[in-house]
Image (cartoon, rainbow, N blue to C red; front, top):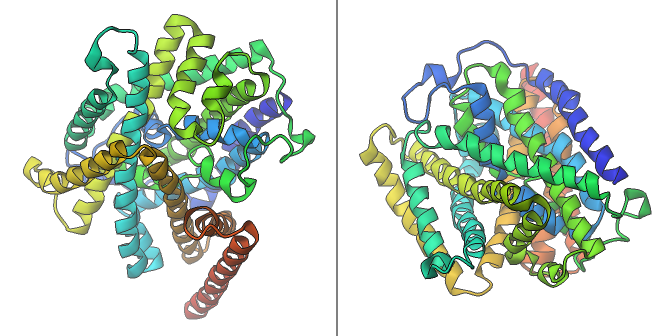
Length: 487
């Protein structure tokens, strides 16, 4: 528990110290924000700062800081290091600067930002890549809450409530409504309640950890010695724990809130703060999972959580933890938060996809009819993905695996785009250059060792190191050329 407590303190200090440093590097000012300059009553409008924080937190949370942390706990105390360092120096920095860049560029979506700073070809690639990623989020984040709701209703005696297909349909209908409606009609009204539920769950579980004082591995006992999985810490840990450390998906969500912020000076608590909060949730769930993994207090838990199929069994794990620790009322409120998190990320993912596509084809979205032009083909594609997922026993695990890699690859492009911006603005670019190089190495290694060629770790790492070196050389050449043209 000492490592857990130190990690909690480190994340809080990271917000106040490193978060303020990153804010100073960017330099927010009093210029009019898109919420004021481009108000349209649908996507661009001023919302209260506390509400924006709650919405941003739910937008980026999903099941990532819960399911990802449960899976990441199998790597032992190494999970703590990645959550702390990744969240403070990579994830929160990534979220803050991508949100602020969107604000500075009229509420621009991620492909537009990447196009402006990396060029038209990366923009076109990221347009397709990000839309596909967001549709995968829509499909993946239907399954997990549907599975959890099915589990909760197993003793209800009502047959259709115990059918996951019923819940998938209900959730997807909600997605359609939330994607189409103005942002203040559904998202702005119900998200604060869901965010409270998710935060309540995290605080309640943290309190139970201090009550139980579990005997779990500490960092000084060996980073790799306590691992319960055959997978390599590098690169698998850095793909498994994404939303609790760094996630490219977040950069697709930040523009939604960048279009609702009244002042640039609200950026640090909204963007950097929401990511630190998510890191705290991930830290708590990783510790809870370690409690069960290493102490075996609940019959049947090891069978449910064991092996490499923990992804698809995570909803059952969450249900078991909440029922055993939080009682009836606490469990209901906690489960509400766990169910709401993926649903609220799923609907905003599809909303982001709608806006990205609309911006690309220059189709205004104030008219419902024009929103339908984008939404009908998009929802058709997501439904096809859902049908394939349900028809294949390993469908969810396959999509989740590719989602994990795609998610972190998106963060790589975002970090490089921000680095180019910082160089052009004569600001400290090392704050994103170092994470960009590291995540480039992680994603290439994972692609060649786990996803495509199944190379051994040594060969995959060699390819990744060569790619990272090539990226660095490209950056140095561009940097020298840029400085020369500025003289």
